[in-house]
Amino acid sequence: MDTSSEQLAIAIGKALGGGQASAYTGTSYCQSGNHVVRHTISVHPRAFIWSATELPDGPTRTFDPRSLTLQTDGVDDFSLSIDRIPFSFPEAVQLSFPLSLPIWGRQLDDYHPVACEVNGSDTTLLLRHRVDRTIFGSFTFDTESGIAKTLFTPTTALKLERELPPENGEHDFGFVSGFGDPDLQTRLRPDENTH
Image 1 (cartoon, rainbow, N blue to C red):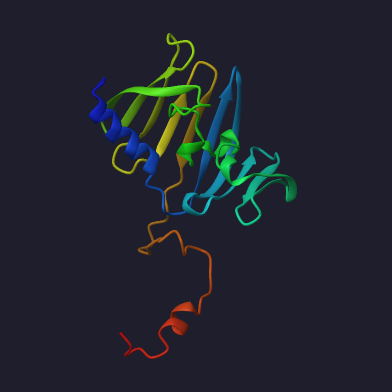
Image 2 (cartoon, one colour):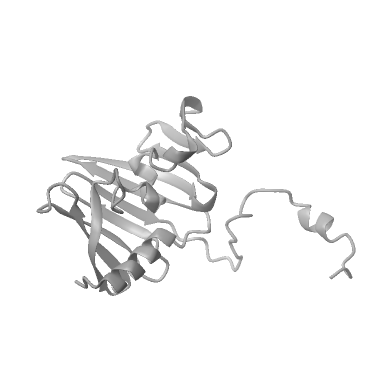
């Protein structure tokens, strides 16, 4: 474990960056006590768009970033104020939005990072509880991309398994993937000789 403030600051910066410009799908696992819940998720982190369906056939929760509303099966649950985003996101998508995790030492967070360790392609942050300094947890992410993988504390276990994009030779630019106007490029460049 490296406890130097410089290495810890670098690791925290990578973890908060998240490296997740592209939309993706995956499976999240949430455990509290002896109860594990699986969700299939679809996330576009930079746009704050997500959906999480409890498996095998549970409800689907979504977030509408335009109206700032959390929904369950298409019905509005409640609206969030801008300062509550992403703190009110459910556990199923919290690893996709690292700032939603209560681990960064902010005023209302339960934990704060105290050390880091690199193991192969992963970096793990050691977390210490703010009140009881004998309680620890860990947050693991991919070192290169910053993509979160797990969060473990004595009361919570979160794990994210992202599905790999199809290897069809196409590029996924995330912010245009699956959305938008197919004629946008034509309207932007009506004359191909315009540069």
